[in-house]
Image 1 (cartoon, rainbow, N blue to C red):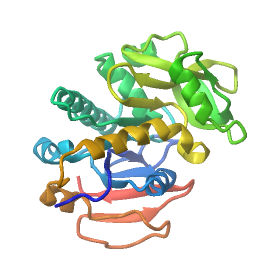
Image 2 (cartoon, rainbow, N blue to C red):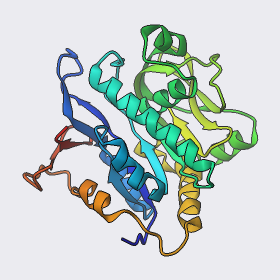
Image 3 (cartoon, one colour):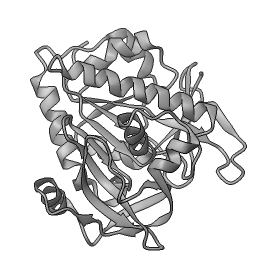
Image 4 (cartoon, rainbow, N blue to C red):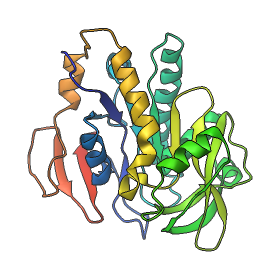
Length: 290
């Protein structure tokens, strides 16, 4: 099967049905924000949903064909003790480590990690397991359902991202955990920090020093998508460098590509494996059988 546009894989996090009581996690439900899908479409990028239950053999058949990978957010809060969140973390860790291995063969796959996905990247880079000790060592509790004007570092990357930032729109945040501003993130360059409602400073934007991995604690996809410009540039470079014809494993692509998120209205019985429904707060829920 031939690709005509860049293709990005998305690993959505498990859908948490009741974030107040924290009682109901559903293993075969995941979600992603509609804003992210809109952002990809606006930049002529195709996407494919990668369920965190995907087998390693299936993943290896499609991963080298991707031009980028996206690790999006989760429900706001600390749910690292949940078994489904742990399963999702291990799959993200496996994907990241394999993307690094592919880079040794000059197959570069840029990564964009947001909020929960970004926090996972930090834990993975530090080779941390999901223990309360490691979570407390890495993150602080914050009160961040707000918009900020980040403090960009006076570096080449800091100046680049600052030039892309829209001060009028600001940067939207919705999270309860964040890496402390004084925490040293292994192998990552800090691009910007932000303050929560109580003036606690946390690390907001980072980039890996060796790989094209970009991390955001906030959500530029809401109103500040130009901050994603460096990631988009890397995705297009990855796509253009691949030999022609640009092929992808049709069997796995067809299996994963059963649903396209093209409407906010609920849809029923799209196929025997996936169903799609709309939720509040511009969230998409993608249902699949675990």
